[in-house]
Image (cartoon, rainbow, N blue to C red; front, side, top):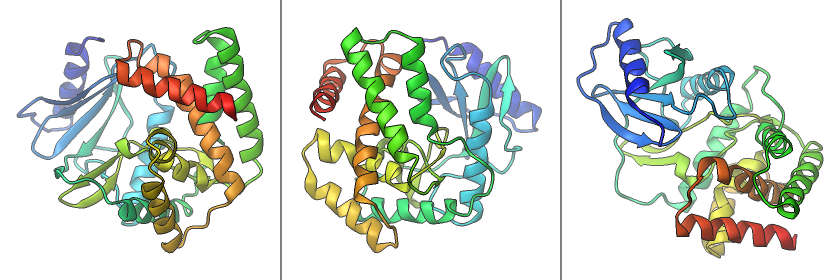
Length: 287
């Protein structure tokens, strides 16, 4: 586990420099990214793994830009905190940004609302003008596999082949700004309603990528076709169009991306994570 003292200091000194006095330091998440509640309304998100595969602040800048755009147009997202410049900020070598604190409620997100809110975000993001990297999480994952040996040779080659095919196939479909990592762990049910968060993977690609990310676990890990189908139906009823072939390639690409990142995100996976990894590998091997 990476140390947290210096990232906490970096966040607190940054908010103090902007005239805000932290009155608490509640750790909301402690992984490669540290999430801290520093006041009643302010949350800091600090990258701890400064030596990881993502260097610098360009990706934070893209996250901030898309989050601002979504907030300004009333999309269901957690907003950046208005008391600080959007940044991205960097102090003591740690990139960070700052968000409004929202209160989670202990109710599962309804599948209909998942599909509807994702379509709402896509509608707003379709008007986002700044250029974003094309299919970035797929190309980034392929680069990682080309640079690092993370799996046995046969498995590593299989993952690279799936990513190469998915990149080629998805390049042929219309692209727009996406969430990039729209799994349900990046969705919060709050007193403000269902809100999407964690936009650091935003890139340009087919909308089917985000929808595939939202349904992958239900459809292909939990064999819960009912939930997956309700999400798909709600997305379409909200005005979204989904291409069957693009969905197929997105599901495959999503599995390959998640698998490629597993050794980086979970170097010591618990039995449940090991099961999930093996399930994805088994599924990909059959495609």
